[in-house]
Figure 1 (cartoon, rainbow, N blue to C red):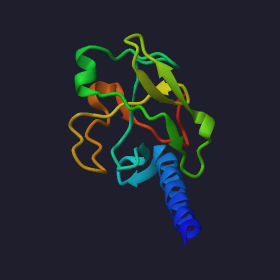
Figure 2 (spheres, rainbow, N blue to C red):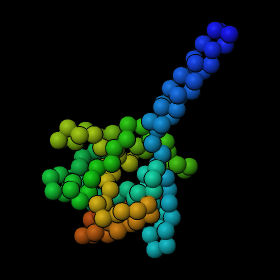
Figure 3 (cartoon, helix red, strand yellow):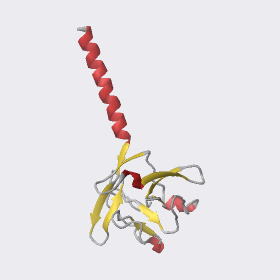
Figure 4 (cartoon, rainbow, N blue to C red):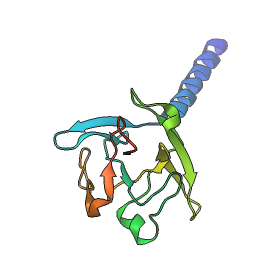
Length: 139
């Protein structure tokens, strides 16, 4: 009986640990919307954006810019179908914070997107855009 009890406890602990490890994987999704087309979102459906003034592995958004465009960072990414895992990397910003990139470009949220599927940041100041993973980066 003690062996059975120990086995059950060990199994529960292993399942819990596996769940924690899997939970660390943050899924990125590809959504589609009329007038926008395909675009990347986080696991909750919140839209991810890129900044036209950024360059590969370098963010041009700092200070008050980050109040409106918070950085997106997850240590690991579960990628959607049609996207390669090596499309996602981590950059260490000049302020020391980590930020996830897609094909080298830093990813951001828009502070006015309040619900999954919101894309209110699209085209802001003609420098902020959603990311179509099939055509990004735009040539």
